[in-house]
Every structure is written in structure tokens, then in C-alpha cells.
Image (cartoon, rainbow, N blue to C red; front, side, top):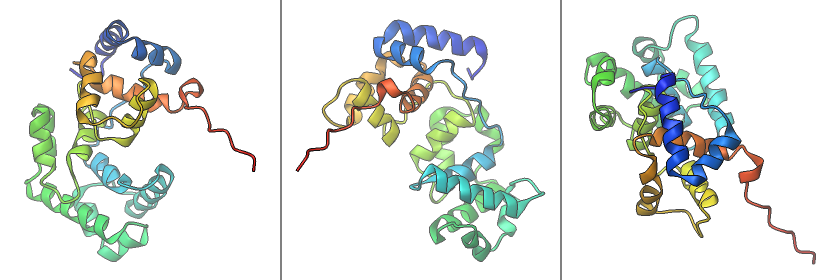
Length: 217
């Protein structure tokens, strides 16, 4: 299954029926609008760039990198042609520059078979991608969700997901793995859709936690 209209409508009916909190979130956020990025290599490049930096900083680096390879596409061969110094010049850390070179090398050599990931199970995709330096389970899960359009991925370690669960479900602290999966159990087999709504809930005013009052001295 993937993000086709029939599957999405089935997922939304399931989530509304099984989880009252998610029903409220879906109503407030509106239609599911995520469209998978079918350029698998570019998706991984973007994921590596985005690790542990703000969205604004990641977008700036991505834009500079894409301008550097332009007018060519972002391919393993084109990225491998860029020197370490060129990658550093667009704002990448030394570590991330080495990750991108390792990704390019492994894809070019056939060690990572991006063209076959669509036919692999989720666990097989994670095993395939985590061969690359700098790609862990979280990055592989983002690939499953945002490139392959898999419907039942739950990235419980994602900070945005944890914060949303804490806020939406009235938890006293960020949830641990067991608590996160307990909350997500009713979402199955559409955890990707619910996770997307968790991320989007941060943008909805009614779900933002109240600001703490400033004490007057």
C-alpha cells in the first residue's frame, strides 16, 4: 500500500474511529497532503543534511548544494565528483560531507540498491540503508515514509513525535518507547498517517501548550 487516495481515506476512517485524540487532530489540521519524494537518492541526501540542525539551516545548505550541482540532477556520480572542500563550502560539516561521499560510493558500487527498496520489506530497507555511515534507523524510517510512502511507520524516537504525544495525550513528560508504542497501537496499520498529523499538530494554535506566565519581580 502507498499514499493513494483510497488508502488515505481508509486510513483516516480508521484513525478517527480508533482514537478520539487523533480524530480531533485530523479535524483541526485538515486533509493529508504528504506527497512522497520519488527521487530516492536526493531524499537521502536531504535527510543527512537535515540531521541535528534547524529546518531553516538545512534548507539553506540544500539550496546551495543543489545550486552547486546544477544544471545536473543530484546523482551519486555527480555528488561523488564534488570534493570534500566543495561540500564544506556549502555549509556541510566535515562529518556530513564524509557521509554524503560514503552514500554516493555505496550506491554507485551497488552495496545500497535504492532501485530495489520499493520491493523490500520495511526491515529490509532499514538494513539496506544503515550500511551507510550517518544513516541510522530514524533516517531510514524517514525514507520509508517520505520517499517510499509506506503507511505503517512509527518513528518513536523522533523528538517532534514525542513532543506531540506529550502535548496531545496529556503526558507528564516525554514518552519512552513503551508508552509511545502503546499510544500508537490503535493507529496500526496506518502509523505513518498518524505520525504526520502529530508533526502537523505543532502548527495548530489550539494544540500549542499554554505559555508559562512570567512572574513579576
